[in-house]
Image (cartoon, rainbow over all chains, first blue to last red; front, side, top):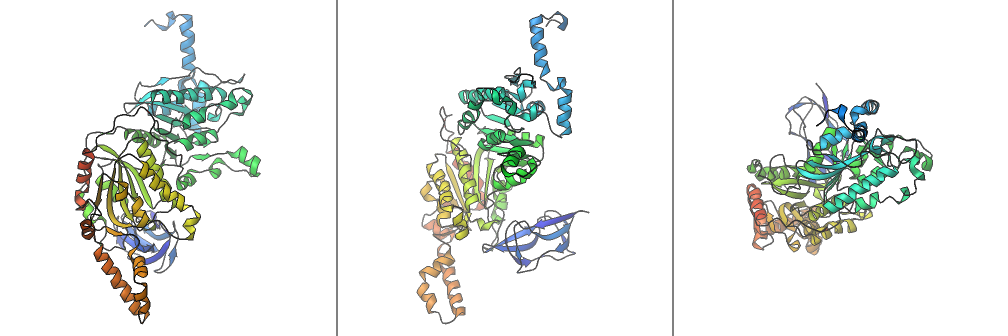
Length: 73
Length: 505
């Protein structure tokens, strides 16, 4: 088992968290949505795995490159 | 052939001298390079060239400074075939005085670049070295070397590809900065000045990797293609040159039905435009450049039914596809490469417009967005535009709109057109009505309904009725229409003169 950090590609705010720790996800599933420039930008799982942690809260700010979730794959 | 023992002495002398420069005769040098974890220049040359196609130039050259010795004076160069295409290649040999540029290898490389100019051959540069060799400073002709001028004049005439497999500083970095496309390994380091110069000027000791690591150059747009190692770098160089075979047998088409669902129904939801590029092109034919820079746009080479195309696209995943300075710089230069070599351009438009605000104005966006418009307005290559979703303002005007006379201008059902963002337009057009609203809630409600009305008047079909597009299509037909359109556009005759220069950035 390896840890895989999901990172935000953009600066913005956490719009909606669509997964929770313990949840199994498939590659391509949306983990959460970031709002930036009035757009909802999905952060997707880059591999099949289990969500270990969500590192942000809805409404919170993120910068480009910030880790927003951690998966175990 | 006579057996070796009977060779005449004059021939024997030559054969021995020829053998001395090869890796087999230089075990210590090869071991040093292996210890450094890198390929020798000759191993790279062998991997680049098609089998038995390499003809070496200047292999017998010795350093000009007395008492110094080094195989081919640190530069392996010659003609070769790469994927069946004739090229000139120059490879700095790090095992000879750290691949430095000497008086003699400057003369050699200038000869090769002039050769490329005269015979119109693409150039591959293997740039592993630390700039000028100080020992040769006494050589009279040295300060007048035309190396960089001759190389700069190749711009737009022939494709130039740089590979940075280790360290490229000063003169090597200068060549790297002039290449059309620069490929670098993740552990490479580059910079205009290496550690000794930096220490002398700034009084601080840095390692090469602290001065200019690949990660920095990837983010700044200096590196076009980032790779793991030498083998990947060479494969990428070959792949890039392969696009200059303008027509090949058609490749396999990905499932086109995918295109119907790529743009989400929710207009606020972003999607990755790379999926669109991958789907309209032949399977495994896409090569993106500068993916680490100007992320609000994506620029890639690809093939559509075997025909080479360049693609510029807005990327809604970043800044909602708003065109900022890096995105504009990246697109403008990509258009120049396509135009110089007569590569048709596919433009995928989904932009809310140029990026706005005081911060972007500080970056010179007025001039840099003008670069994209200027490049497209003055290009003579066919442009094929597809509006995927947002087509707003000056951003859309630049992204292959009607006034730029695209060969075809298509729109998907999700296309939204507006001279500016519709929410903003409502604020201006209905300022009085909104002002007159009794409560903020009423004002918001009025704003929403006016915006919705404006959107209904600007749907893809309504815009089609106003002839804003040549057609509004089923996204799944995009590739087919692009193929048919490309078929109406014959390949131009090979050029005998340079069409245009490609700016270094």
